[in-house]
Length: 208
Length: 208
DNA sequence: TAGATTGTTAATCGATTAACAATC
DNA sequence: TAGATTGTTAATCGATTAACAATC
Image 1 (cartoon, each protein chain N blue to C red):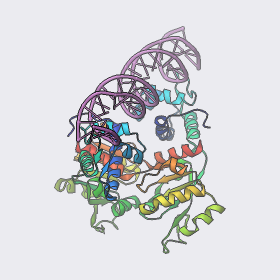
Image 2 (image 1 turned 135 degrees about the horizontal axis):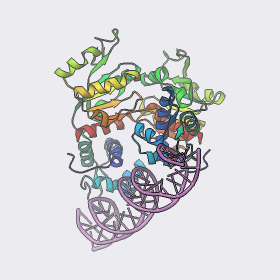
Image 3 (image 1 turned 180 degrees about the vertical axis):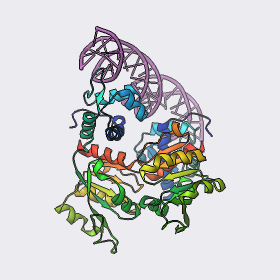
Image 4 (image 1 turned 120 degrees about the vertical axis):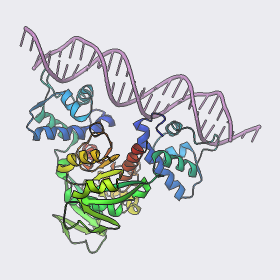
């Protein structure tokens, strides 16, 4: 991996390709051209071919792309063909929502454990995920390290928790707490999901 | 509003400015320079000044920006100084999470009603938000139209529901269903919050 | 083969950064 | 006033689009 520099713009489109190709596969479509793919996704055909050529060509002139093998290539580039482990920290409503409804497997993850500070939750299970005492976080990690920490706890605690899990040695943080965490500062990969930013953009759009 | 074209790149940064300025205000900071703002946000000072100049200058040479009035300007540009109304459609875990924990007011919104198909939920309240029968959606809207529909129902139903609320006349859709909805197709503003895309990007980052 | 479609190079477009005169 | 910092113009950089030879 990591042979060549891939621009953030391209990376942000990878999940879209992945999703679209899965849908084509589900619908039994065997081959697809850059222009059809582009049309489905609101991109241009040029862009699609340009994007794929970052990773070497996957297509065949005059034919297009084989859905099955292109999907496999994209999945492998993203890394969703492997299984990474994740722990959820903070089992409020949002934590519950993720544990219950989110399809981690399609993103290359398995949710292995959850942590909370609430005594009423500690020791219980949601689905087959155990909720453990947040105090056990570090000792648990030493015995059973996980790749990614999912931050769904109150925002006041987010900065300290991010520092802690980064120091523990997670490789990434999936952050729902509406504080901005910086990769440089923490030295791990971070994906911020800021509901407020998203709704403010919608606010702007409808206010125009 | 809408006098001049503002690029999507600039628009996406507006919520960040807004959040940062609110924090400065909360901390009692009275003035700020483009370079301090840039440092806080991981932008460049040039970019900050360039961004603000899209809307006319808000600063003063040799001084910088007054936090209070810059915040007011940005808030007004985004539209969060007005109160828009929103209805949540689908009160599962995620819907619950939003109703209970999300600060709609800071984004210029008031959550006025919720809809679900589950008879056990219909007629109950979360906080002070009534849950109504999804069958009443259209009749309710005619009497009490809302600006934005928040889609937190199962993804299978999302496309039809988006079509329905767009036809009813909402001005925007805040979409959590992991299907891609297109503005052109529906003719309303759309903000997609795709958890899966976000986690796949994190997957890519940690796989490199 | 003829038609279709890729991969890639070149051209265009837009966004970011640098520089600096204006001025508080 | 001198120092600081803006707003804006010009330069750079990067991303998207167009074009087309290669070829299945």
